[in-house]
Image (cartoon, rainbow, N blue to C red; front, side, top):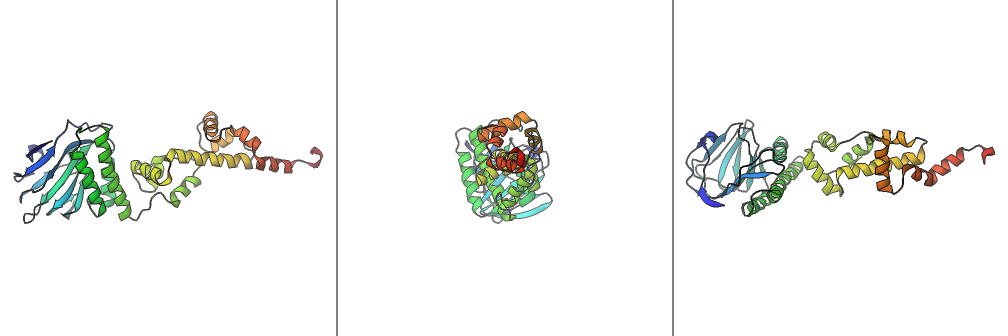
Length: 302
């Protein structure tokens, strides 16, 4: 970390002078395909100059979030311009042209972070798709606090920073859901899983049906339901398997196929892991199954 002048290379087309002091970090070179979300740059500029203006084309590889601490400005992306002011944050996606500037009469003070890697590009695009670039309210304070933590981390890479950046993106995703009227994993989603229990459902498919980004849906599902999506889905499949074992004469192989298992051995393995016994042993111990088949026997067989 260091105090420095705002600097950028000429390819990014910086217009105007920036003689203000900035609390500024520029860690090691970011690898866009890294498993972790990495910081490219982050900093605090309490007073941008009146002629502060930055434009970038669609070759810029970093997404970014700016929180406006003081003053006013504007941000343009995806063909639309938006005013911004104190206690608002704006989000910009990688590889999308954009522009942001200060109001000459009331220049912005900002805290910002640029990042890449992990699934950050997809999450940022999801936020812009559903909620646009500008956010305010309680989420502003939440992400400012997370950005401050990023600035003061001694190590500017690895899982610690990635977790903080992911927290910022999750906070914005939650705000998008509030603004769009979405509820956390609700009855309709659980009903959809039950109604399609005989298919090989995937998290990606269910999240797409209900308009969530897969990574966010996974986090939201675990937080709301209390277990991961895959664990919940397997539990529902095994519960339905128990129902079929109790109420039908279907073979174990047929039940496995009906519930979308790739093979019978996988089904038996998962069933035993959850129930402690094999499917056939479960059927043999089922009072409902025994009662049903006893009622079917002819009188002379009793």
